[in-house]
Length: 363
Image 1 (cartoon, one colour):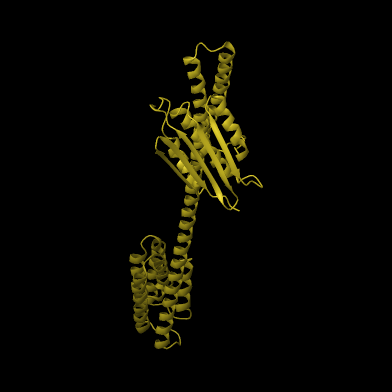
Image 2: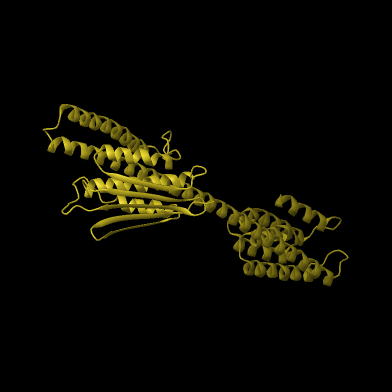
């Protein structure tokens, strides 16, 4: 392309004129500039400088010099492009002084060259701005994609933690029941065969259920894309609290349940599930640390008023946490209640352990 422009320029300049020494200069300058033009892609400033010098000598180098100036305007900083454009204007001013051609006055020639190089500067600046905008948009898209990936990973992690809390509560409750029945079988070998058989059956069923729940935990840890919730496992509701209390009574714990809950419709799943886990953890702790003591469970509240859960039990005169007690139940329960927007308090006052939770219940 540049060779064609050089040839057209030489032909237009010498058309109808007698050949002379300047024709040789134009041919040499044209061939040299044609050879140098591709190098502007790698060394735009240096090569354009050489082409600009050739343009001051011969009009045959004008097209390659302007191409080089455009490359500089595209690729280099704006001050460098201005310097190269100014050098181009000066070179053509020199060319117009000693190689005047055509009917165009010298002043208009300078104006034309200045406007031409100014247009090249503007084109290059626009191209750089557009390239910068495209890079910025690509970077923003890349960061948005990375942020989305981070959010997905974080959501998966939080979901895994939530399910792990569910599994901890269920397993802790189940294993505490098993420990109670196993302890009864150990300390009451003189019990009737019917009671021992019943206790053994409860232990056997509880072990099977615990194994199933443990398989769920292992499956959760192996799965890279966990399902929402607990898969097909039904989630607990407030109506399941009496059944939970009956399980504890069956294990030998005396439980007094008082419900004053206005339930025109079932509580939202998050509220019901959190309330159920609070009662479950309270009963589990009572079996661990207050064997044989009365446990009082109070539920009250309703839509708009929130749900209040209060679990109290007297502590045994002398007790020690059993070896299978991990001590993390109340920590996880506190986080669970906080995630539901509520508040959990637990304290020991006058030999009595008190667990109180307040959970918002939208109207």
